[in-house]
Length: 325
Image (cartoon, rainbow, N blue to C red; front, top):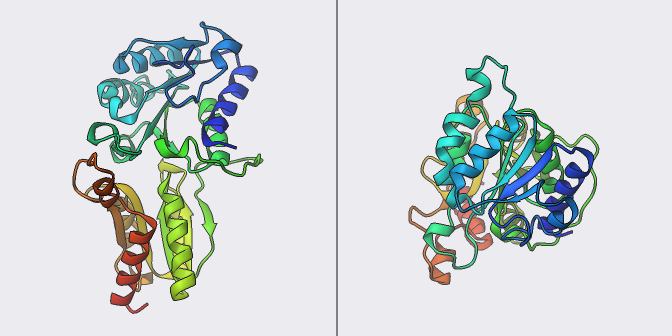
């Protein structure tokens, strides 16, 4: 099943079973969404439940907050995370705080979905990875999905929550085809172990998970190095228990992500593991991340600015040799 079709299926199921679920955003209705995630839902549920909005991101999120306060369960789509900067006032000052500032009297069952990351020559203003910004804000959950199964279940789970959720997707995952399965009692707060291994724990999320899996295949085939790959489905909170349990066995940690290295999720995970698991580590944690530059338009430079399967393989191999692996 295509990644975008899995999200569409989750939205359809949620709308079919709960009349309070509504969708709003730019071009989500008649056009079916910029990435066709809401395709067909306007025809099925009509303009009162699939609402095309003006190009006004702060108003989209603000309207969704008002809807949630009045008893609906809105799913707001921001066309890309790059545009979410215009909605940060509503996300940071209202969406994340209303439950707390009302003494728990105001529930906010609200999902804000958005794709992010490097596509193919979308240039600096349309290629950013901004998860660290959202994950640094208390009062919201930040979920992300790397395949069709996780995309379907996380979307449904987020809609049923009574607290606000930022749901991050990746531009390049939408057309990717995955095996799909229904999972009973799917828990997005629990990270998934996608590959077993004994030498290195490799943590990643979103599209980078698939580059990590390829790199780990290379490490096994060429070097006989075995990696345990962990896919984070929740970036706030992070399932540190799964990471700690893996590091206890492998004693080495690598974090791979597309955003620039400085002050990213890798810094947080690396610091927590160093604080809590210092005496289990045989090597300092390694962060493999994007370069400290705005993403270039040139395809060759674009690929040099982010981790790829080959670059992940080489960086892990060099780091391992420096630290006795």
